Every structure is written in C-alpha cells, then in structure tokens.
Image 1: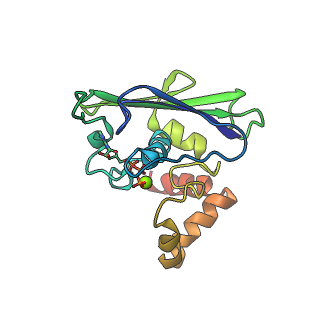
Image 2: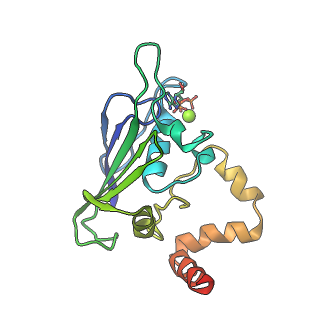
Image 3: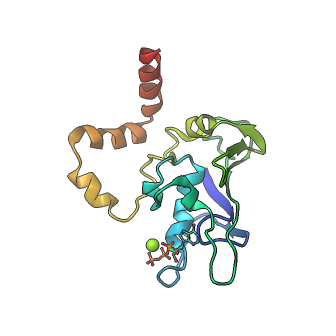
Length: 180
Ligand code: ATP
Ligand code: MG
C-alpha cells in the first residue's frame, strides 16, 4: 500500500483545487515558511478521520475551511481526497486503488466517501485502523511528537505499540462491546 495522490480544495490555505501525485519512494515537500507544507500533512490526517481541531492547529473544525485572503473571498466548504495504491490488498477491500474523501461545510455538515460511495466517518477510521496509517498512527510524526512520545506515560506509549502490532482494532471493539 502506498500513497498515490492527494486532492485538496478549500482546505486551509488551498483555495484552488490542487492535486499532488506521489511516487513510490521518498517525496519531499519544500517551500518557505507559511507556504502550506504542514497544511498538506493536516489534510492527510483530516481525511483519515482526525476529529481534533486542536491537533489540526485550529480552534474549531470550521477553521480547516479556506478563510479568504487579500485577493480571494472565503469558501464554504473544504474537501480532501486521498488515493492509495492497494494492489497488495493491505486494506481489506477488493479494490486495487482506494480513495477516501471528506468534505465539511461551514454549516457543520460533513460527508465521507470510500471510492465515491457515501459512508460514515467510522467506516474510514475502521478501514485504516491497524494499517499503520490511521489518525493515531505512528506513520505521521509531526513536530514535537518525538518529545511527546519520550515524555508520555507508559500506558500512552503502549497505544503506539498496539497500533504497530495491529491489536488496537480488537481492543477498541472489546471496549465498545463492554460499554453496550
Ligand atoms: P513552516 O515552514 O513555518 O512550518 P508551513 O509551510 O508548514 O510553514 P503551514 O503551517 O502549512 O506552513 O501554513 C500556514 C499558512 O496557512 C498560514 O499562512 C495560514 O494563514 C494559512 N492558513 C491556515 N488555515 C487557513 C485557512 N482556514 N484559510 C486560509 N489560510 C489558512
Ligand atoms: Mg510547518
């Protein structure tokens, strides 16, 4: 499984529709301060189901929608699609290519899609859980994360190992079953 493409429109600083193609191997994103490098990673985390506005460096979820600039007026929705190569079927779906989409409107309404089929946020979160790419996964190490891991309590650190070992899914299910 690898990241193939990221399509963004109206998310944070990206007013225009942009499409980033990734190739197998290493891709580096470079640019001056404030040019939107971290916003690209925020878009990946957001489409994978991030629900914390704070960890997306905003105050409320609406802050992910393009707020306008000197030359452009604000937009009413933000949309991100992430396309993955799934030829190795690491994601448990029968498709060689999987794309997930998330859209949010200023009204607060949200829409989620897996391969253009409308779904729930939970379906996206479940799809990526234990794939190593989930919203809590170790595959995205943001600024300050290394210190956070080193300073975290053993129980918190354990979650990282559980995700890596692929047991988080079962633990989450067990917890859900117990609260029912
Ligand atoms: P650095 O090198 O300093 O880490 P960066 O390239 O990672 O910079 P980002 O943090 O991705 O930069 O981008 C910050 C820019 O995104 C700021 O100029 C900020 O105004 C803009 N931005 C964030 N949210 C929105 C929004 N909702 N609407 C418009 N612009 C936004
Ligand atoms: Mg940055």
